[in-house]
Length: 115
Image (tube, rainbow, N blue to C red; front, side):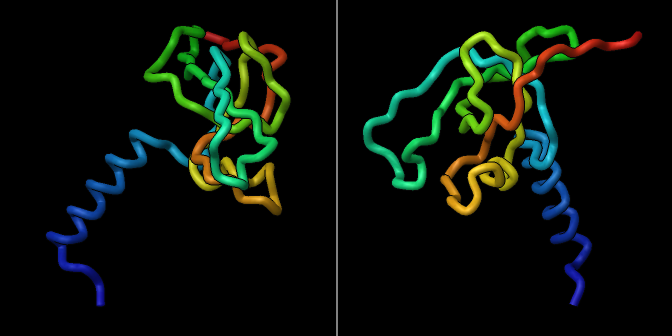
């Protein structure tokens, strides 16, 4: 049975608000600004490098808050990287499924914008 219009509207609003805060399935450009050392962690994080990334605008300015991402590309501090969020963040680590919601999936060599 389809949801009533009141519950559908509530669900749609919550869904939209959540995806606005944490986009999933989209590639985002960010700069690596630090690293995380964790001696006690989930076993599926063993061997996974955790880096702090700062999302960037199209003019390379900081956009939003920094967050921690699992690195699948061997990135280092100061590099610009591709970041995915949500379930897709675990895909590069298959068959292991580390408990992460952000992952670095590539290192940016260069990027240009045409006006």
